[in-house]
Length: 358
Ligand code: 57M
Image 1 (cartoon, rainbow, N blue to C red):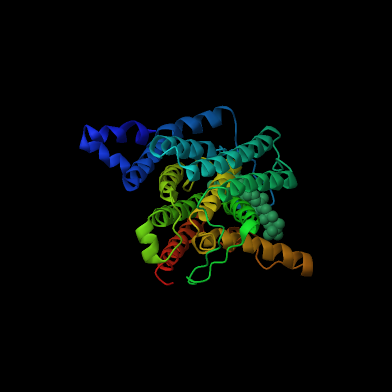
Image 2: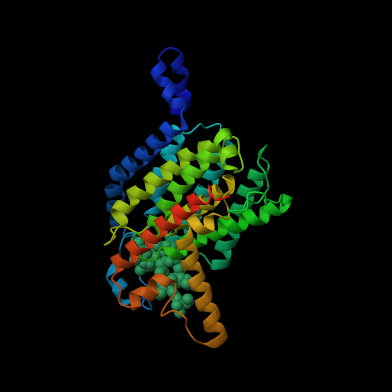
């Protein structure tokens, strides 16, 4: 909104020319998101406590989690507000990529909210049946990807890290890829969110990495220099990504160990969906495997554990996802969390380096 209100004033005052620059608006979207989190975070945590919207802890989990019973959940509401307001304030609202990403994020956030509400109101860990949840995720992903494929100039090619001359156009099959990426990432972040700050840390690092990717992909000269696909207008997504970084940092202030609030499915499903959507738009869908490597490792640990248990009756890990395995090995929760953050930063740097190794 500010872009539309203030940039036109540059004809009278050259100072307002600054609102034209994506970098300027990205930085201030990040700062705005952080400030919103700090201002509304304590208020929301108090409201969640007053309404007894607290987490029910499963008894079959690590004993160390039992003391977390009643921790306010649905903190994803704070994350969503801290992403939406700065994006609407600082982004160019005629940009279709921003709107498609907002659509996916809000819809998956509403799905997560409904799931959290059912869990809290019925005091059980079930929530929405898994099949129903999956179908709604797939529908949101299909609508978002279909809209993306209709954007003029958006290529349905698939880009692979390192292989600059191999990016096949898969046409309508891109819809399948889009559904897989958005639903997969949404559920991967959801699985990862099992320790204080464990999901929001890598989310912040991934969002920061994709802030750069969006800016580069939307810049014709730099994209050509780096030999990455140029997607006209996708640079505006940097403002959304900046809001996501600020909102993640702000939420981490309250979710860091010992957590005052959990994000709930309200946060995890929407953040994962947003990352998947952004990866598609910036034409770096496969690089998400590296950037979001922590989410991949967590999900693979579950797949391996369930497959092994079903096939051989034996567990590969002491408990899946893998963060529980280290808890049962006796690692302190903060140690697991910070080490996963370090790996996430390492993977983000590797992913950025692949832009030069092509
Ligand atoms: C998402 N949710 C956390 C919180 C958060 C197939 C199986 C692997 C599924 C998996 C599962 O149920 N995943 C659901 C993970 C839960 O966190 C809530 O959920 C939201 C995210 N969706 O925002 O509201 C618990 O995680 C802890 N937590 C924190 N700090 C945080 O900041 O400590 C969360 C956020 C919270 C809290 O204790 O209650 C979760 O873990 O459920 N199931 C599991 O992950 C279970 N693993 C398991 O069953 N493994 C089996 C087989 C099936 C693979 C095995 O290894 O044999 C574990 N989860 C729990 N107890 N809660 C172990 C049992």
